[in-house]
Length: 90
Image 1 (cartoon, helix red, strand yellow):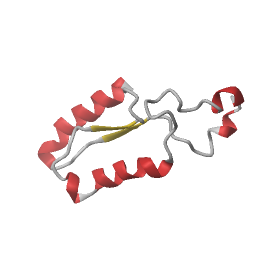
Image 2: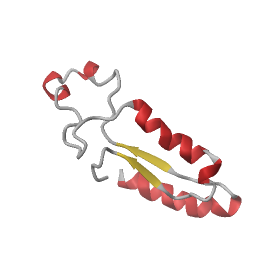
Image 3: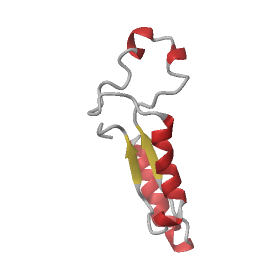
């Protein structure tokens, strides 16, 4: 994970002069249909409870971060890592 953060920041710095913005979204525990299919039934019951919000996120709660970074509202944002983690540190 740290490598992706460093890569995002380095690429943003390198490509900024070309007008290219580079950002990342760092999702925490997000509940998707894949989670129950993982086979770790005893852990699925507690999935996401270790976040300060006490629950996993939903995909719709993650989507806004991507929409923001792709919008004109983020035209001066580059090199950022947006945490969508329910308050859990990266």
